[in-house]
Amino acid sequence: MQRLSKNKVEKCDYYICGFRDCKVNPDWEPEKPLNVIKVIIPNAAGGFSGIRFELPTKEDLEAIDRAIAIRDAGLEQLKKKGPTS
Image 1 (cartoon, rainbow, N blue to C red):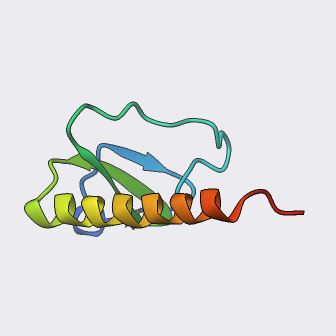
Image 2 (cartoon, helix red, strand yellow):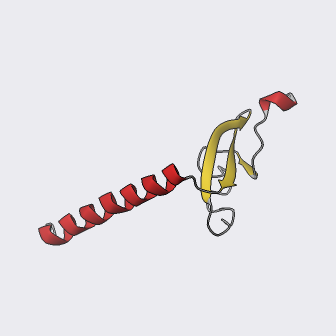
Image 3 (cartoon, rainbow, N blue to C red):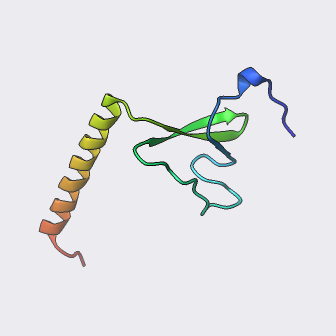
């Protein structure tokens, strides 16, 4: 068991034992409320990662738009290339 002082714990909505998912139940995923982004905080409470849902900033929304554009461009390239052998 690991004891942590309050100042060593970052407030989160959920804590998980892995980095991006639960090691014991990897299929578990907390339900994400509408219009928020999921932020993963490594080592939020000792060896546990934290999950926090936040309203996106203007910069977050711009980054999401850029990521969607890159994804769409890549998918378009794959369509043009056709099936690979």
